[in-house]
Image (cartoon, rainbow, N blue to C red; front, side, top):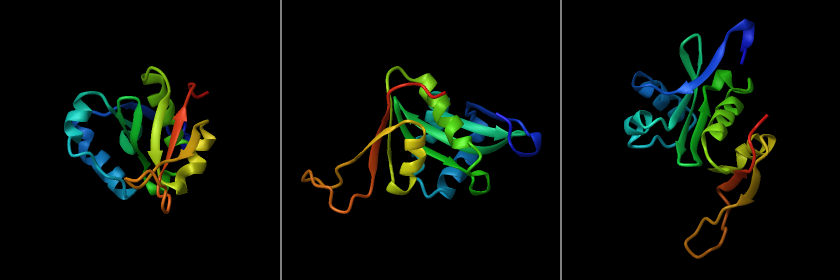
Length: 141
């Protein structure tokens, strides 16, 4: 993928020395950073996007579920999140799933995810829906 000014953006598995950057990207997007992030990186469950070696985005997988995906604020809108999700979809067997906030629904729908409201309280209700669930049944183009 080519970024602005002809720069080359790559998606790859995170390495141990990417942990701090992954934490910063997730934290900057107000997403929870997994406590076992270092172990998840070693297990190959974390993907990063890089631009000239600098981490611009991160995606954390939990099996076939996207646990978190985030892009640095200045880099949003350039297809980086889409590339991260596409790379994750290629890695899993079967559909790729994600739970997310309603404000990012357009992002997931644009990638082909089927979206539904997720139950939010322990009684099976959806009081003040605060998150959605999506499933991608096919690879991304």
